[in-house]
Length: 135
Image (tube, rainbow, N blue to C red; front, side):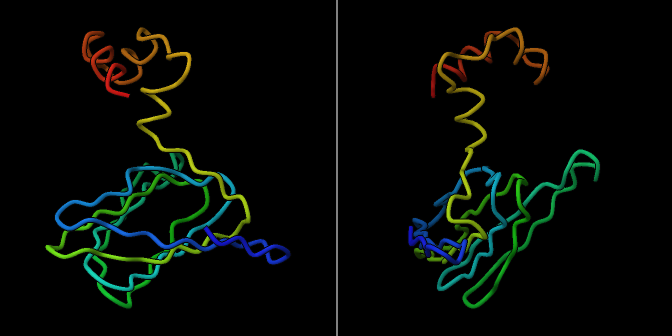
């Protein structure tokens, strides 16, 4: 990641493997992200806030396309092409933070009590324990 001191921005290059290379659902609590596709085909999206009905916004992006992920919202990028994809990600902070959703929920240390996650996700407790064992 390139950090531009004094400008309050950062820039990173993301390489995606063909046929499913993924930047999994995550959020940047301290920065808006702008993604510029340099090659390949990406399926991208973000989920709006609870107050906005948790609406999913998605788009298929090709070389030269640009997409913005608002600060703090959960978003993802998936390579749906048969060739590698590459994109540049600019963030409106020198330290935007990254919280990967699945890792945070199922891989926290110490683990979140399975009873909490069972109720939150309306899943059987054994499913929660299985998911936690994989992070």
